[in-house]
Length: 88
Image 1 (cartoon, one colour):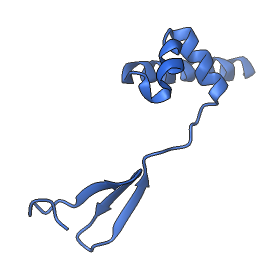
Image 2 (cartoon, rainbow, N blue to C red; image 1 turned 45 degrees about the vertical axis):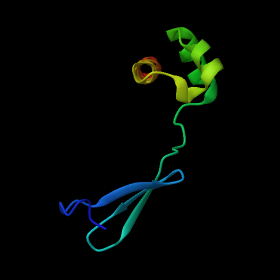
Image 3 (tube, rainbow, N blue to C red; image 1 turned 180 degrees about the vertical axis):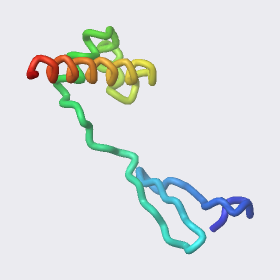
Image 4 (tube, rainbow, N blue to C red; image 1 turned 90 degrees about the horizontal axis):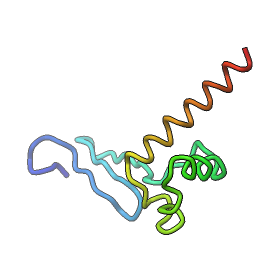
């Protein structure tokens, strides 16, 4: 299935699965749900520190803004770098 005869593969969701059909009709499947690299405890601690934990409590992790998620990742990286520097 080609997208509007543009030569681009068709892409669509079936449930929580993202499907991309290629020219060869092979389908590549990517799950929309990924395992978290951070523990729930760390994410909760960072959300409290960064001031958006109330949103997490009310709406869950899917309710946070992209900028808050980005700031959470940046802070986790900073903490990891500080921990690595202490080990040297």
